[in-house]
Image (cartoon, rainbow, N blue to C red; front, side):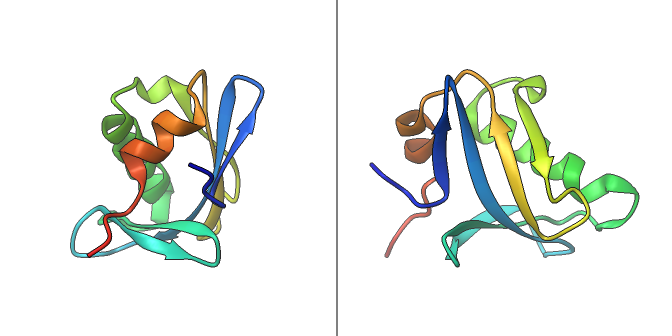
Amino acid sequence: MDEPWAHEAGTDILMDVLVVPKASRTRIVGIHDERLRIQISAAPSDNQANEALIKFLAKALDISKSRVEIVSGATARRKTVRVHAMRQMQVVLKLKPKTV
């Protein structure tokens, strides 16, 4: 299950994501430019969208928020997120967008 948006980094996973803030609801909507596209209902101000992203990913992966970290792009829509101590296959199976 090799996905361009999920890369192993030792025992962690680095995910390339594209965040769309101020959406009607928080959800994964697909792949865009080899990034996992995630709509976030929170506004991008006061770090609200970043916090909502971390909370959403932690819940979707069934892990604690402390294991999800934004490592680059904190003020941008294009972000790299580290998921500590998880395998790529687990992440892909839980987050891969549904195809019709």
